[in-house]
Image 1 (cartoon, one colour):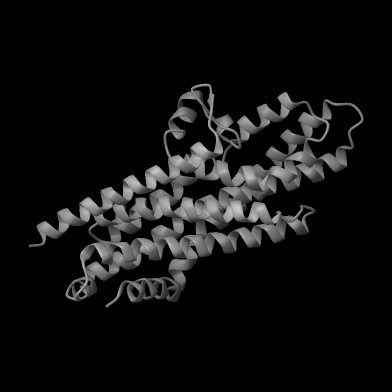
Image 2 (tube, rainbow, N blue to C red):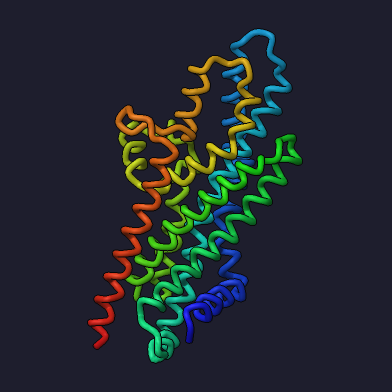
Length: 302
């Protein structure tokens, strides 16, 4: 059995399980409901209030522009969430293979365990990139229908690049956690916890500026916030320029820090390049940790 065949087989198993695909998108649906019906108006009112302090503003136009801006903010968070939840659902297939004995059959093939593990990670990465890209396309179309503008070609390339890096990080992380989970029940429970917590860790349900300073500093020590920061920064760029036209740079800066599209770590601004490096370094470190766990398990199986 070749590496390509393993990757192809794992991807087919994931997409053939409709419930796995549904539950990997469930957090996206929950976020949409929360933001559109509970939290979205609050964020829109914040932008409208900021702009109302400047004379000569068109309140109706400001609200329309603020709505598009917040929709982009929500969309960036949703794409960030999917990079986590899709990989969780993807590795359910690996654990099912282990529990039902299919993994042992694969181990008998003339292929190394490292290659088998790499096939699972690559499969999870590909599925995550596909689902996140579909989510991006759907959210972009919806925002356009609400009065927003289509992203430029360069912005699309940047977004796809961030999606790829973000998906790699969580493919590595979830592989490590999946190797530690012994049963499907344990993985299912862990996946539920991850799906619930990731929205808060990434500043997705609430802007990071609304957390206490200690909590916000803790979130900046985790990779989740950096993925959503990059996605939102690109997706909100045009809408932000329109919504804050005529506003002082200080107001825009404070708003970006409040919403997490700009980040400061101990009063030092975190650049986009630094965010990418954090994601890549975390992804590589987690992948190596997963490889060590796989090696240990190989020895314990003897």
